[in-house]
Image (tube, rainbow, N blue to C red):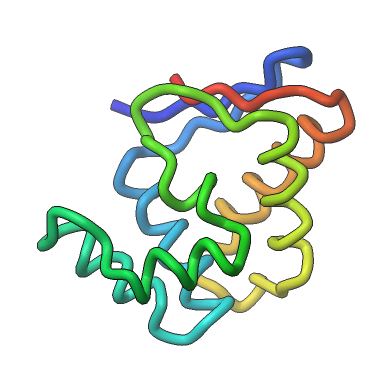
Amino acid sequence: MALDLVVKKRGDRMTIGYGAYFNMRIEILNTIQFGLGDKFKKESIHEKFYSDEVFNTVKKLKLDNFIFHSDCDGYLTYREVKKTLEVLEKYNFSSNEWSKEINQFINLLKKARDKKSYIYYC
């Protein structure tokens, strides 16, 4: 099974496995702040709730709508798309082992921003 991320007004999509999507978020966090993705991973797997440290750090980074989003359904609003893209564009993910997927996701965010659209998770 795979996750489809779809730009509503364009039909552009990104298909990624659920595990790959999870790992992509971990690597984004580790690139932005060393060790944060590892803490996110550990708490996602072993804890019922995220610690205040992880939750507040991700929120302060303005990535909470993306990082904590369900990978089963729902959507990122146009406002959340813009906010997530503004943060991700500040960082260089080229040396990251998930750079292909991260860049594909960033490009999808750009398409949604340009069309003032949502991204649906399906």
